[in-house]
Length: 190
Image 1 (cartoon, rainbow, N blue to C red):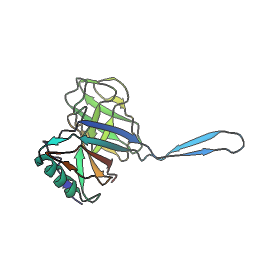
Image 2 (image 1 turned 135 degrees about the vertical axis):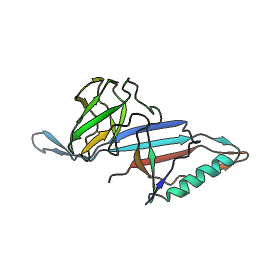
Image 3 (image 1 turned 90 degrees about the vertical axis):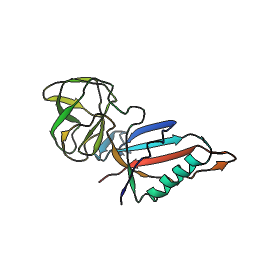
């Protein structure tokens, strides 16, 4: 397994990022009550669309990128393409140690974060759950639970996680251009 670099010249025309949670629901056959168990193995799922391109050069570049991923063998570091940086005013921050399974991280910095802002800490891609003003030792709720303990510098611009290609996309050509290509990825869980 090795890392493949996302080509800087490829800008998706559409992008979606969703959280996939692993849980089990147990329902009583008699009383109708339910119990849900969260197995704490959240992962991000990303879908990207690369628009049709005039000529064949971009199609060839996309083909090479897809082939370099070798199915699910290799991986690529991706970020939230619609929000590459936080919408709040926080310019830098550090995270105190947070344990596996935590639903909040304690940050030290000066500024604000908004619900939906993406943070990168210790290789994990985290999403802020609610608007918050960050100061000294501020607890910040996150939507995804921590798969592993984290601490250290917080990445606020293009925070990434490693993703594997989950489908088998191909570039189709018509006279004079390459057709749109849809790419689906799942976050690598290490």
